[in-house]
Length: 144
Image 1: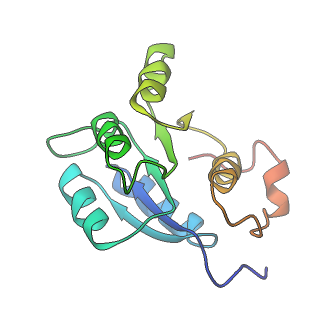
Image 2: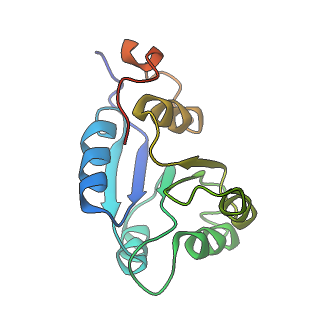
């Protein structure tokens, strides 16, 4: 498929093991991916790596939820400009408003088309040379 050698670095913050593994496997074709399931491991990874993009669930393990982590990221001068895409099963209008108020750049509720998620993530990266596969045009192809 001819993907660029320097893939954008993505951190997936997702507490559901199956979702985390699927997202890591699928998105690993387009991004250099790390994943975690809690606020504790989130901070461990942030201290060791520089990310181009965060995919953030609201409900995660640990002392803080995804919205609290997003608020803290927005207050951190070295991380404040990193795009955060909220990807969550919280699907009410109020959940969306809370996520955007916390500082998320996008809000996508689960389940969603995996290619629509990929397209959203790619829109928030600086590397525009990654090409979407043809399946992206089939809205019912795959959901997660």
